[in-house]
Image (cartoon, rainbow, N blue to C red; front, side):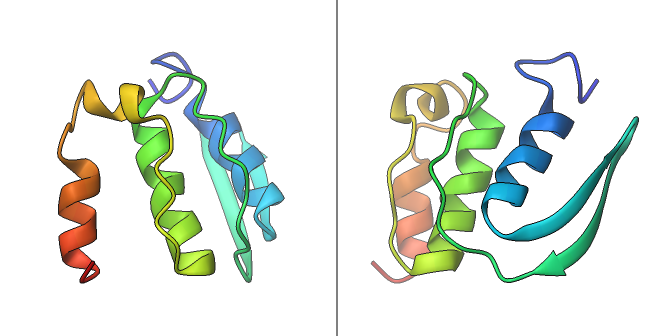
Amino acid sequence: ELRVKESDRISTVVDHLNRAGILISELDDGYTIEGGKIIPLEVHSHGDHRIAMTFTIANYVANGSLDEIDLDVISTSFPEFYTTFSSLIGR
């Protein structure tokens, strides 16, 4: 299911984490993460709300800034995502 929903989530996660400075290898049914230090990246959600939310959080971890990514995509499943996340981080 991870390859055939809104996007190929395995390939998309691997691509994003590689661009974020994480050493990761793609497998047929997942991936292997070696490690690294995450850096901010430009997110391409491919219309997938889970990817948009995941890498919004990753960018926050990387730079301490809450970038609102793909608001329309996220609002389809979690319209209060940014409000909720902001409250969790004390903003």
